[in-house]
Image 1 (tube, helix red, strand yellow):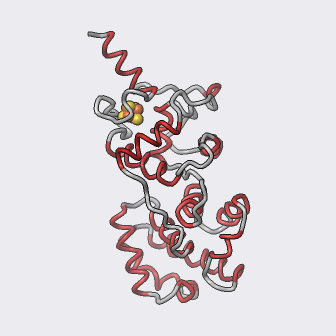
Image 2: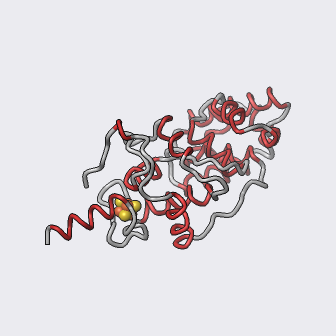
Image 3: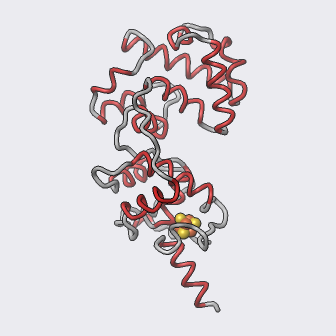
Length: 241
Ligand code: SF4
């Protein structure tokens, strides 16, 4: 299916209201629970492990790390090689070990221990800038930590959300991977008071179930009657009858 990619219209207002999509997806999948009472540092380690691997492999590596190291402070002071066997299930274990040790040490140096609880009192912009300064932390991981760990109304944009929101007509930025301007544009669309965390999780679920990178299944998608691509595809198929 041809996608509308016009950089001149990258920031056009969405044809389909964010609130309407969010409500439909909550009816389809339910809301996501608030996780922000758990330690923020747990979320950071989790999301660093979750990049470029499956949920199952991420869970295996996370559980192995928790079993191997009684605390994140002990892990911060370990040699990288001591993390290798725990990280193997997630793949890229050498670079993950290097980034995890360097990140935990940087947090220890800043806050006196491997804890990010101090961020709860910081404004969004300062939280994001600090997280982005940590080794291995990119925009998606930083915003996942802010959303899941700190309970901030920030939309973390992954490749599923990038693809689905383009098809919905919420942006027209090019490329398969989210860009910083595109991610910021999508964040600016979030209505005040919206449960952005549930929208994040549910857009990913929809992307996996109905709207994959290949041919989307608009005929059975819960957004099929309102989505820009779904409606256009439906009208096109009717005109071809
Ligand atoms: S209607 Fe089609 S293009 Fe739109 S979100 Fe659903 S599957 Fe994707």
